[in-house]
Image 1 (cartoon, rainbow, N blue to C red):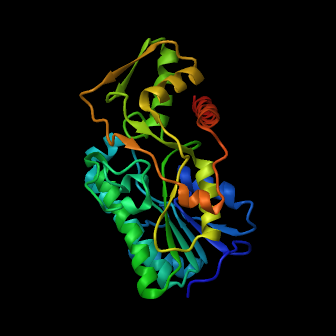
Image 2 (cartoon, helix red, strand yellow):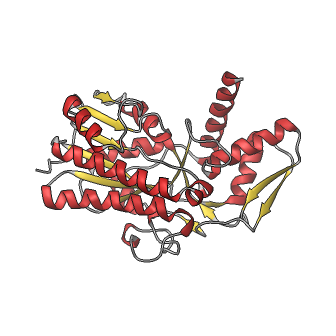
Image 3 (cartoon, rainbow, N blue to C red):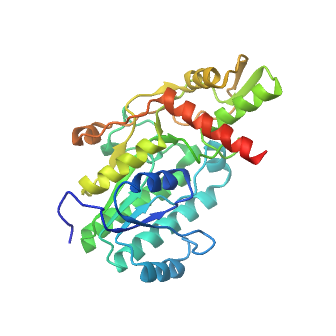
Length: 318
């Protein structure tokens, strides 16, 4: 049976799937304030793509609450060049964890999707109702299809079994523990790393994929974690709910912001032969705002904190 709201986390055994990633690690930081016991597993011990292994762990650990943040993630290049991995791995992770949570009678599960589930030319800002209303962006459709399947799986288990499984759709995220790899990372982290490298090497030009015109929304990952915990306690609906910052900017404007933070005085050279991806990705966050949640960390402050974290990691590894 679906429990009444609010749903308390205090005293509960809370499993964070994907705790080593950017989102999972932020969830652990936020859950430290909830008075719950957090459970984690490493992929070396349990491969979430293996149903039998996942079932064994759930039967032994008996989590009461699950945040499903584990996923194979990456930017346009990674999605476009490794479609099999992005589709299979994310399908398997979602299916195995959701099924195990059902069989072990987990009280509540929150599935973290992605704003890329919405059609390439969805109305802006993108409401939750835009889901499946048009074609996906080709450069990330493999990841998007897996995330849509995970969302639909949660809906199906609610309908058939009465499971309190909910789905949230975050916008583009950034922050500590992001992937700063130039080939597989997301745009903000990769651009930070690329601009920092140009500054250190004395180069005057930083090359960027695409035209610089696409508009993107960015949310600091600790704000996302706060919203996810808030919704775990206050949201119990079949329909997904968006989590975003409520504003966007162009990639060119992002590059200029990063240049200012890094101290790069050169220029950016855009390569229009490379894909831009979706023209605009701004989420409609009216549902979340109506519940009373707002982000606290703006893009300028969050990017500075992310750059400070990145430099600290660089110094520690040198």
